[in-house]
Image (cartoon, rainbow, N blue to C red):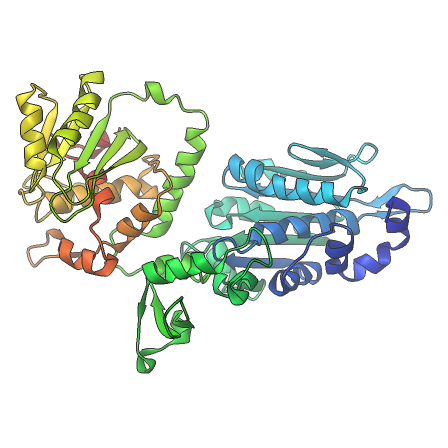
Length: 507
Protein backbone atom coordinates (compact mmCIF):
# COMPACT_ATOMS: atom_id res chain seq x y z
CA UNK A 1 0.00 0.00 0.00
CA UNK A 2 1.17 3.57 -0.71
CA UNK A 3 0.06 7.01 0.51
CA UNK A 4 -2.62 7.39 -2.20
CA UNK A 5 -4.16 3.99 -1.45
CA UNK A 6 -4.05 4.76 2.26
CA UNK A 7 -5.83 8.10 1.70
CA UNK A 8 -8.50 6.39 -0.40
CA UNK A 9 -9.12 3.86 2.38
CA UNK A 10 -8.96 6.27 5.31
CA UNK A 11 -12.60 5.72 6.31
CA UNK A 12 -11.98 1.97 6.46
CA UNK A 13 -9.18 2.46 8.98
CA UNK A 14 -10.99 5.16 10.94
CA UNK A 15 -13.71 2.60 11.67
CA UNK A 16 -11.25 0.21 13.35
CA UNK A 17 -7.86 1.33 14.60
CA UNK A 18 -6.75 -2.30 14.95
CA UNK A 19 -6.90 -2.57 11.14
CA UNK A 20 -4.57 0.43 10.89
CA UNK A 21 -2.18 -1.16 13.38
CA UNK A 22 -2.21 -4.45 11.46
CA UNK A 23 -2.19 -3.22 7.84
CA UNK A 24 -0.33 0.08 8.02
CA UNK A 25 1.90 -0.04 11.09
CA UNK A 26 2.44 -3.75 10.40
CA UNK A 27 2.46 -4.72 14.06
CA UNK A 28 0.95 -7.67 15.87
CA UNK A 29 -1.12 -6.95 18.96
CA UNK A 30 -2.30 -9.60 21.37
CA UNK A 31 -6.05 -9.71 22.19
CA UNK A 32 -5.72 -7.60 25.34
CA UNK A 33 -3.66 -4.97 23.53
CA UNK A 34 -6.30 -4.84 20.78
CA UNK A 35 -8.96 -4.28 23.43
CA UNK A 36 -6.95 -1.35 24.82
CA UNK A 37 -6.51 0.17 21.34
CA UNK A 38 -10.25 -0.03 20.69
CA UNK A 39 -10.84 1.40 24.15
CA UNK A 40 -8.75 4.45 23.24
CA UNK A 41 -10.54 4.75 19.89
CA UNK A 42 -13.98 5.01 21.48
CA UNK A 43 -13.34 6.59 24.91
CA UNK A 44 -11.98 9.94 25.98
CA UNK A 45 -10.08 8.74 29.08
CA UNK A 46 -8.34 5.34 29.33
CA UNK A 47 -6.10 3.99 32.08
CA UNK A 48 -3.93 0.87 31.91
CA UNK A 49 -2.07 -0.70 34.84
CA UNK A 50 0.36 -3.38 33.85
CA UNK A 51 2.81 -6.03 34.92
CA UNK A 52 6.39 -6.14 33.67
CA UNK A 53 7.18 -6.51 29.93
CA UNK A 54 3.51 -6.73 29.03
CA UNK A 55 3.62 -4.26 26.14
CA UNK A 56 1.90 -1.26 27.71
CA UNK A 57 4.23 1.28 26.06
CA UNK A 58 4.02 -0.62 22.76
CA UNK A 59 0.23 -0.35 22.58
CA UNK A 60 0.40 3.26 23.82
CA UNK A 61 2.70 4.12 20.88
CA UNK A 62 0.31 2.37 18.50
CA UNK A 63 -2.63 4.36 19.90
CA UNK A 64 -0.70 7.61 19.46
CA UNK A 65 0.05 6.89 15.79
CA UNK A 66 -3.53 5.84 15.12
CA UNK A 67 -4.77 9.14 16.55
CA UNK A 68 -2.11 11.10 14.66
CA UNK A 69 -3.02 9.75 11.21
CA UNK A 70 -6.72 8.94 11.53
CA UNK A 71 -8.15 12.10 13.13
CA UNK A 72 -7.04 15.15 11.03
CA UNK A 73 -9.58 16.44 8.51
CA UNK A 74 -9.00 18.32 5.26
CA UNK A 75 -11.25 20.17 2.82
CA UNK A 76 -11.46 19.47 -0.91
CA UNK A 77 -8.55 21.81 -1.59
CA UNK A 78 -6.25 20.06 0.88
CA UNK A 79 -6.47 22.66 3.60
CA UNK A 80 -6.55 21.33 7.15
CA UNK A 81 -9.87 22.04 8.86
CA UNK A 82 -9.38 19.83 11.94
CA UNK A 83 -5.86 19.76 13.36
CA UNK A 84 -4.33 17.03 15.55
CA UNK A 85 -1.83 17.49 18.37
CA UNK A 86 -0.36 14.69 20.49
CA UNK A 87 1.85 14.98 23.55
CA UNK A 88 3.82 12.00 24.90
CA UNK A 89 5.08 12.61 28.40
CA UNK A 90 6.67 10.85 31.36
CA UNK A 91 8.29 11.74 34.69
CA UNK A 92 11.78 11.69 33.13
CA UNK A 93 13.25 12.59 29.76
CA UNK A 94 14.87 9.16 29.61
CA UNK A 95 11.49 7.44 29.55
CA UNK A 96 10.50 9.44 26.48
CA UNK A 97 13.88 9.24 24.75
CA UNK A 98 14.66 5.59 25.47
CA UNK A 99 11.22 3.98 25.72
CA UNK A 100 8.39 5.82 23.96
CA UNK A 101 10.22 7.39 21.00
CA UNK A 102 11.97 4.14 19.98
CA UNK A 103 8.54 2.45 19.85
CA UNK A 104 7.16 5.31 17.72
CA UNK A 105 10.24 5.22 15.46
CA UNK A 106 10.06 1.46 14.82
CA UNK A 107 6.38 1.61 13.90
CA UNK A 108 6.82 4.67 11.66
CA UNK A 109 9.75 3.08 9.81
CA UNK A 110 7.96 -0.26 9.44
CA UNK A 111 5.02 1.47 7.76
CA UNK A 112 7.46 2.96 5.18
CA UNK A 113 5.11 5.47 3.53
CA UNK A 114 3.44 7.48 6.31
CA UNK A 115 3.65 11.25 5.80
CA UNK A 116 5.51 13.54 8.17
CA UNK A 117 9.10 14.01 9.28
CA UNK A 118 10.35 11.67 11.98
CA UNK A 119 12.49 13.57 14.50
CA UNK A 120 14.24 12.69 17.75
CA UNK A 121 11.34 14.07 19.81
CA UNK A 122 8.34 13.32 17.59
CA UNK A 123 6.75 13.68 14.16
CA UNK A 124 6.05 16.96 12.38
CA UNK A 125 4.60 17.97 9.02
CA UNK A 126 6.09 20.59 6.66
CA UNK A 127 2.93 22.50 5.74
CA UNK A 128 0.78 21.97 8.81
CA UNK A 129 2.22 23.49 11.98
CA UNK A 130 -0.83 22.43 14.04
CA UNK A 131 -0.42 18.76 13.14
CA UNK A 132 2.27 17.03 15.22
CA UNK A 133 3.31 14.44 17.77
CA UNK A 134 5.88 15.57 20.35
CA UNK A 135 7.46 13.85 23.34
CA UNK A 136 8.91 15.63 26.35
CA UNK A 137 9.52 15.29 30.09
CA UNK A 138 6.58 16.32 32.25
CA UNK A 139 7.19 19.73 33.78
CA UNK A 140 6.11 20.75 37.26
CA UNK A 141 4.75 23.97 35.72
CA UNK A 142 1.16 23.90 34.43
CA UNK A 143 2.05 26.71 32.01
CA UNK A 144 4.12 24.24 29.98
CA UNK A 145 0.88 22.61 28.90
CA UNK A 146 -0.70 25.67 27.35
CA UNK A 147 -1.06 25.68 23.58
CA UNK A 148 -2.32 22.14 23.17
CA UNK A 149 -5.79 23.22 22.12
CA UNK A 150 -6.86 21.63 18.84
CA UNK A 151 -9.90 19.92 17.36
CA UNK A 152 -8.13 16.62 18.05
CA UNK A 153 -5.81 16.42 21.07
CA UNK A 154 -4.24 13.40 22.75
CA UNK A 155 -2.07 13.02 25.85
CA UNK A 156 -0.18 9.75 26.28
CA UNK A 157 1.34 9.49 29.76
CA UNK A 158 3.71 6.64 30.53
CA UNK A 159 4.82 5.81 34.10
CA UNK A 160 1.76 7.85 34.98
CA UNK A 161 2.00 7.26 38.73
CA UNK A 162 5.07 9.53 38.82
CA UNK A 163 3.38 12.64 37.36
CA UNK A 164 2.50 15.50 39.78
CA UNK A 165 -1.19 16.15 40.42
CA UNK A 166 -0.93 19.73 39.18
CA UNK A 167 0.09 18.47 35.72
CA UNK A 168 -3.02 16.34 35.44
CA UNK A 169 -5.13 19.38 36.27
CA UNK A 170 -3.46 21.27 33.42
CA UNK A 171 -3.90 18.35 31.00
CA UNK A 172 -7.57 17.97 31.85
CA UNK A 173 -8.02 21.63 30.93
CA UNK A 174 -7.07 20.68 27.36
CA UNK A 175 -9.49 17.74 27.04
CA UNK A 176 -11.97 19.45 24.75
CA UNK A 177 -13.69 18.49 21.49
CA UNK A 178 -12.24 15.19 20.16
CA UNK A 179 -9.64 14.54 22.85
CA UNK A 180 -8.01 11.54 24.50
CA UNK A 181 -5.96 10.89 27.62
CA UNK A 182 -4.19 7.55 27.95
CA UNK A 183 -2.43 6.61 31.20
CA UNK A 184 -0.10 3.58 31.34
CA UNK A 185 1.83 2.61 34.47
CA UNK A 186 2.97 -0.07 36.87
CA UNK A 187 0.70 0.16 39.94
CA UNK A 188 3.43 0.72 42.52
CA UNK A 189 1.43 3.01 44.78
CA UNK A 190 -2.17 3.17 45.95
CA UNK A 191 -2.36 6.97 45.98
CA UNK A 192 -2.26 9.71 43.38
CA UNK A 193 -4.09 10.54 40.15
CA UNK A 194 -3.08 7.38 38.27
CA UNK A 195 -4.17 5.06 41.09
CA UNK A 196 -7.43 6.99 41.51
CA UNK A 197 -8.16 6.62 37.79
CA UNK A 198 -8.90 2.92 38.39
CA UNK A 199 -11.61 3.90 40.85
CA UNK A 200 -13.14 6.64 38.69
CA UNK A 201 -16.19 6.19 36.50
CA UNK A 202 -14.73 8.71 34.04
CA UNK A 203 -12.03 6.26 32.93
CA UNK A 204 -12.21 3.11 30.85
CA UNK A 205 -9.96 0.70 32.74
CA UNK A 206 -7.64 -2.12 31.71
CA UNK A 207 -5.19 -4.36 33.56
CA UNK A 208 -2.41 -6.25 31.80
CA UNK A 209 -1.29 -9.24 33.87
CA UNK A 210 1.97 -10.90 32.93
CA UNK A 211 0.40 -14.25 33.89
CA UNK A 212 -1.98 -13.82 30.94
CA UNK A 213 0.74 -12.96 28.40
CA UNK A 214 0.58 -15.16 25.28
CA UNK A 215 4.21 -16.26 25.73
CA UNK A 216 3.42 -17.44 29.26
CA UNK A 217 0.20 -19.24 28.37
CA UNK A 218 1.83 -20.99 25.39
CA UNK A 219 5.16 -21.54 27.21
CA UNK A 220 6.97 -20.41 24.07
CA UNK A 221 7.75 -17.12 22.32
CA UNK A 222 4.82 -15.85 20.28
CA UNK A 223 5.35 -12.13 20.86
CA UNK A 224 9.11 -11.35 20.96
CA UNK A 225 9.98 -8.86 23.68
CA UNK A 226 7.05 -9.70 25.91
CA UNK A 227 7.42 -11.50 29.24
CA UNK A 228 8.11 -15.24 29.00
CA UNK A 229 7.20 -18.36 30.97
CA UNK A 230 10.69 -18.89 32.43
CA UNK A 231 10.74 -15.40 33.98
CA UNK A 232 7.30 -15.93 35.52
CA UNK A 233 8.37 -19.29 37.00
CA UNK A 234 11.38 -17.63 38.61
CA UNK A 235 9.23 -14.90 40.17
CA UNK A 236 6.62 -17.42 41.37
CA UNK A 237 9.40 -19.26 43.20
CA UNK A 238 10.88 -16.04 44.64
CA UNK A 239 7.85 -13.92 45.45
CA UNK A 240 4.95 -16.30 46.16
CA UNK A 241 4.00 -18.86 48.79
CA UNK A 242 1.86 -21.94 48.32
CA UNK A 243 -1.55 -22.01 50.01
CA UNK A 244 -4.39 -24.46 50.56
CA UNK A 245 -7.68 -24.45 48.66
CA UNK A 246 -9.57 -23.28 51.75
CA UNK A 247 -7.39 -20.11 51.87
CA UNK A 248 -7.67 -19.28 48.15
CA UNK A 249 -8.98 -15.77 47.40
CA UNK A 250 -8.71 -14.69 43.78
CA UNK A 251 -9.76 -11.15 44.68
CA UNK A 252 -6.59 -10.81 46.75
CA UNK A 253 -4.37 -11.93 43.87
CA UNK A 254 -4.16 -15.66 44.68
CA UNK A 255 -3.71 -17.75 41.52
CA UNK A 256 -3.14 -21.23 40.12
CA UNK A 257 0.08 -21.95 38.28
CA UNK A 258 2.35 -24.80 37.29
CA UNK A 259 6.12 -24.45 37.37
CA UNK A 260 8.34 -27.13 35.79
CA UNK A 261 8.53 -30.47 37.58
CA UNK A 262 5.68 -29.59 39.95
CA UNK A 263 1.92 -30.11 39.80
CA UNK A 264 -0.36 -27.10 39.45
CA UNK A 265 -0.46 -25.36 42.83
CA UNK A 266 -2.24 -22.46 44.48
CA UNK A 267 -0.08 -19.41 45.22
CA UNK A 268 -0.35 -16.22 47.24
CA UNK A 269 1.74 -13.32 45.88
CA UNK A 270 3.70 -10.75 47.84
CA UNK A 271 3.50 -7.07 46.89
CA UNK A 272 6.36 -7.29 44.39
CA UNK A 273 4.55 -10.04 42.49
CA UNK A 274 1.24 -8.16 42.66
CA UNK A 275 2.83 -5.07 41.09
CA UNK A 276 5.41 -6.48 38.69
CA UNK A 277 3.53 -9.56 37.49
CA UNK A 278 -0.20 -9.23 38.16
CA UNK A 279 -0.48 -5.50 37.50
CA UNK A 280 -2.32 -5.15 40.82
CA UNK A 281 -1.92 -2.46 43.44
CA UNK A 282 0.21 -3.34 46.49
CA UNK A 283 -1.27 -4.31 49.82
CA UNK A 284 1.21 -2.21 51.76
CA UNK A 285 0.58 -2.61 55.46
CA UNK A 286 1.21 0.10 58.01
CA UNK A 287 4.06 -1.94 59.50
CA UNK A 288 6.07 -2.05 56.25
CA UNK A 289 9.27 -0.06 56.69
CA UNK A 290 9.62 1.13 53.08
CA UNK A 291 6.92 1.25 50.34
CA UNK A 292 8.06 -0.07 46.98
CA UNK A 293 7.27 3.17 45.14
CA UNK A 294 9.84 5.04 47.28
CA UNK A 295 12.53 2.66 46.04
CA UNK A 296 11.37 2.92 42.44
CA UNK A 297 11.45 6.72 42.60
CA UNK A 298 15.04 6.47 43.85
CA UNK A 299 15.76 4.12 40.92
CA UNK A 300 14.40 6.68 38.45
CA UNK A 301 16.53 9.46 39.93
CA UNK A 302 19.60 7.20 39.77
CA UNK A 303 19.04 6.54 36.07
CA UNK A 304 18.61 10.25 35.33
CA UNK A 305 21.71 11.31 37.28
CA UNK A 306 23.91 8.49 36.04
CA UNK A 307 23.56 9.73 32.46
CA UNK A 308 25.62 12.84 33.20
CA UNK A 309 27.27 12.26 36.58
CA UNK A 310 31.08 12.26 36.85
CA UNK A 311 31.62 9.23 39.03
CA UNK A 312 35.25 10.12 39.61
CA UNK A 313 34.27 13.33 41.38
CA UNK A 314 31.33 12.38 43.55
CA UNK A 315 32.82 13.60 46.80
CA UNK A 316 33.55 11.68 50.02
CA UNK A 317 32.23 8.16 50.24
CA UNK A 318 30.33 6.39 52.99
CA UNK A 319 31.12 2.70 52.58
CA UNK A 320 28.72 0.28 54.27
CA UNK A 321 30.25 -3.16 54.80
CA UNK A 322 28.32 -6.35 55.59
CA UNK A 323 30.78 -9.25 55.95
CA UNK A 324 29.80 -12.83 55.16
CA UNK A 325 30.64 -15.54 57.63
CA UNK A 326 30.37 -19.28 57.71
CA UNK A 327 27.25 -20.44 55.89
CA UNK A 328 26.74 -17.20 53.96
CA UNK A 329 27.92 -16.89 50.38
CA UNK A 330 28.59 -13.18 49.89
CA UNK A 331 29.88 -10.03 51.53
CA UNK A 332 28.40 -6.72 50.39
CA UNK A 333 29.94 -3.24 50.12
CA UNK A 334 27.58 -0.30 49.54
CA UNK A 335 29.16 2.83 48.02
CA UNK A 336 27.15 5.95 48.95
CA UNK A 337 28.19 9.49 48.04
CA UNK A 338 25.73 11.81 49.78
CA UNK A 339 22.35 11.21 48.16
CA UNK A 340 23.78 8.97 45.42
CA UNK A 341 24.47 5.25 45.88
CA UNK A 342 26.96 4.40 43.20
CA UNK A 343 26.86 0.61 43.44
CA UNK A 344 26.83 -2.51 45.58
CA UNK A 345 29.96 -4.69 45.40
CA UNK A 346 29.24 -8.34 46.11
CA UNK A 347 32.18 -10.55 47.04
CA UNK A 348 31.45 -14.25 46.69
CA UNK A 349 33.12 -16.16 49.51
CA UNK A 350 31.48 -19.58 49.11
CA UNK A 351 30.45 -19.71 52.76
CA UNK A 352 33.98 -19.10 54.07
CA UNK A 353 35.23 -16.15 56.07
CA UNK A 354 37.52 -14.09 53.80
CA UNK A 355 38.71 -11.30 56.07
CA UNK A 356 41.85 -10.40 54.13
CA UNK A 357 40.05 -9.97 50.79
CA UNK A 358 37.35 -7.77 52.30
CA UNK A 359 39.91 -5.80 54.33
CA UNK A 360 41.83 -5.14 51.13
CA UNK A 361 38.73 -3.94 49.28
CA UNK A 362 37.81 -1.56 52.09
CA UNK A 363 41.40 -0.34 52.53
CA UNK A 364 41.60 0.52 48.83
CA UNK A 365 38.52 2.71 49.18
CA UNK A 366 39.76 4.43 52.34
CA UNK A 367 43.21 5.31 51.08
CA UNK A 368 41.88 6.99 47.92
CA UNK A 369 40.45 9.84 49.97
CA UNK A 370 41.00 10.41 53.72
CA UNK A 371 37.48 11.87 53.84
CA UNK A 372 36.02 8.48 52.92
CA UNK A 373 34.57 6.48 55.81
CA UNK A 374 33.83 2.78 56.16
CA UNK A 375 31.13 1.49 58.51
CA UNK A 376 31.55 -2.20 59.21
CA UNK A 377 29.07 -4.52 60.87
CA UNK A 378 31.27 -5.94 63.63
CA UNK A 379 28.82 -8.46 65.02
CA UNK A 380 30.33 -11.72 63.82
CA UNK A 381 32.89 -11.92 61.01
CA UNK A 382 33.03 -8.17 60.45
CA UNK A 383 35.00 -7.78 63.70
CA UNK A 384 38.02 -9.37 62.04
CA UNK A 385 37.85 -6.99 59.09
CA UNK A 386 37.52 -3.95 61.37
CA UNK A 387 40.45 -5.10 63.55
CA UNK A 388 42.66 -5.54 60.49
CA UNK A 389 41.85 -2.03 59.21
CA UNK A 390 42.62 -0.48 62.60
CA UNK A 391 45.87 -2.47 62.65
CA UNK A 392 46.72 -0.93 59.28
CA UNK A 393 46.15 2.54 60.70
CA UNK A 394 42.81 3.45 59.12
CA UNK A 395 41.11 5.69 61.67
CA UNK A 396 38.33 6.35 59.15
CA UNK A 397 36.99 2.82 59.68
CA UNK A 398 34.15 2.53 62.22
CA UNK A 399 32.66 -0.38 64.13
CA UNK A 400 28.91 -0.56 63.59
CA UNK A 401 27.06 -2.85 66.02
CA UNK A 402 23.34 -3.14 65.36
CA UNK A 403 22.74 -4.29 68.93
CA UNK A 404 24.17 -1.08 70.42
CA UNK A 405 21.90 1.39 72.16
CA UNK A 406 20.41 4.39 70.37
CA UNK A 407 20.09 6.84 73.23
CA UNK A 408 19.96 10.42 71.96
CA UNK A 409 19.35 9.34 68.35
CA UNK A 410 16.08 10.50 66.78
CA UNK A 411 14.39 10.43 63.40
CA UNK A 412 14.45 13.37 61.00
CA UNK A 413 11.55 15.03 62.84
CA UNK A 414 13.24 14.68 66.22
CA UNK A 415 10.17 12.85 67.57
CA UNK A 416 10.80 9.12 67.29
CA UNK A 417 13.29 7.21 69.41
CA UNK A 418 14.68 3.74 68.78
CA UNK A 419 15.16 0.46 70.63
CA UNK A 420 18.68 -0.06 69.28
CA UNK A 421 21.11 1.11 66.63
CA UNK A 422 19.70 -1.30 64.06
CA UNK A 423 16.26 0.29 64.32
CA UNK A 424 17.78 3.78 64.08
CA UNK A 425 19.87 2.99 61.00
CA UNK A 426 17.00 1.23 59.24
CA UNK A 427 14.79 4.24 59.95
CA UNK A 428 17.49 6.53 58.55
CA UNK A 429 17.13 4.70 55.24
CA UNK A 430 13.36 5.16 55.45
CA UNK A 431 13.69 8.89 56.15
CA UNK A 432 16.24 9.20 53.34
CA UNK A 433 13.98 7.49 50.79
CA UNK A 434 10.76 9.22 51.87
CA UNK A 435 9.89 11.59 48.98
CA UNK A 436 8.32 14.04 51.43
CA UNK A 437 11.80 14.76 52.86
CA UNK A 438 13.23 15.86 49.47
CA UNK A 439 16.56 14.08 49.97
CA UNK A 440 17.02 13.31 46.25
CA UNK A 441 17.85 9.70 47.15
CA UNK A 442 19.30 7.71 44.24
CA UNK A 443 19.56 3.91 44.21
CA UNK A 444 20.77 1.63 41.39
CA UNK A 445 18.26 -0.82 39.95
CA UNK A 446 18.55 -4.02 41.94
CA UNK A 447 15.72 -6.54 42.35
CA UNK A 448 17.34 -8.08 45.43
CA UNK A 449 17.54 -4.70 47.17
CA UNK A 450 13.89 -3.97 46.33
CA UNK A 451 12.89 -7.33 47.81
CA UNK A 452 14.89 -6.67 50.97
CA UNK A 453 13.77 -3.08 51.53
CA UNK A 454 10.08 -3.85 51.10
CA UNK A 455 10.13 -7.02 53.24
CA UNK A 456 11.14 -5.34 56.50
CA UNK A 457 8.51 -4.65 59.19
CA UNK A 458 8.59 -2.40 62.24
CA UNK A 459 6.50 -1.62 65.31
CA UNK A 460 6.34 0.52 68.42
CA UNK A 461 7.37 -0.98 71.75
CA UNK A 462 5.49 -0.30 74.96
CA UNK A 463 7.89 2.54 75.82
CA UNK A 464 7.18 4.26 72.48
CA UNK A 465 10.50 3.36 70.84
CA UNK A 466 10.64 1.85 67.34
CA UNK A 467 11.99 -1.66 66.84
CA UNK A 468 12.60 -3.65 63.66
CA UNK A 469 11.46 -7.25 63.44
CA UNK A 470 14.16 -9.92 64.07
CA UNK A 471 16.43 -10.70 61.15
CA UNK A 472 15.45 -14.38 61.43
CA UNK A 473 11.81 -13.52 60.65
CA UNK A 474 12.82 -11.57 57.54
CA UNK A 475 15.14 -14.36 56.44
CA UNK A 476 12.34 -16.90 56.82
CA UNK A 477 10.08 -14.91 54.48
CA UNK A 478 12.77 -14.10 51.89
CA UNK A 479 14.75 -17.30 52.11
CA UNK A 480 18.00 -15.32 52.59
CA UNK A 481 19.56 -12.52 54.60
CA UNK A 482 19.03 -8.85 53.75
CA UNK A 483 22.75 -8.24 53.14
CA UNK A 484 22.42 -5.35 50.70
CA UNK A 485 19.98 -3.44 52.86
CA UNK A 486 22.20 -4.01 55.91
CA UNK A 487 25.17 -2.58 53.98
CA UNK A 488 23.11 0.45 52.91
CA UNK A 489 21.91 1.02 56.48
CA UNK A 490 25.50 0.94 57.74
CA UNK A 491 26.32 4.03 55.63
CA UNK A 492 24.07 6.10 57.93
CA UNK A 493 26.06 5.23 61.06
CA UNK A 494 26.46 8.40 63.16
CA UNK A 495 30.22 7.89 63.61
CA UNK A 496 30.19 8.19 67.38
CA UNK A 497 28.04 11.29 67.73
CA UNK A 498 25.54 11.23 70.57
CA UNK A 499 22.98 13.37 68.77
CA UNK A 500 22.53 13.56 65.05
CA UNK A 501 21.19 16.02 62.49
CA UNK A 502 20.08 13.63 59.76
CA UNK A 503 20.37 16.32 57.10
CA UNK A 504 24.14 16.20 57.70
CA UNK A 505 24.15 12.44 57.29
CA UNK A 506 22.13 12.51 54.09
CA UNK A 507 24.35 15.04 52.29
